[in-house]
Image (cartoon, rainbow, N blue to C red; front, top):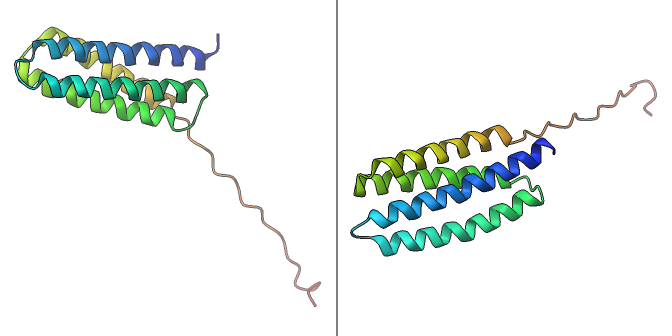
Amino acid sequence: MRLEDIKFIVTIILLGLSLLTALVLESYLKTGYAVQLVLILIGIILTAGIIFGLWIELEWAYPFTMLFFALALADMVWMFAETKAFLPFAFGLLVNVAGLVLCIASIETTALQELETYEIDKKRRK
């Protein structure tokens, strides 16, 4: 197995665990649970797009996944403020931070191509 395949599999697992943790924290909510369910549904749709992007190795896939984990982390903090459920929050925090670190490590920097330079001989110009 290549390293890219392992990163792909681990990222999918972390995406699933992040959505599962959001669902668990949503079950503790007393108000606003309908909004949270809509956010989880949007997260599932975005996850399908992320998995497709990672599968065909598009260059935007890891930055978009990093954005997903950051938004999921913000959502976890909001739900923790509403529910005070520490264990699901701690697990979600661990999953989302691990996802962020994995995505940051997986972003490939593209090397700038060197410009072609030509030597122009002034004597040869007419």
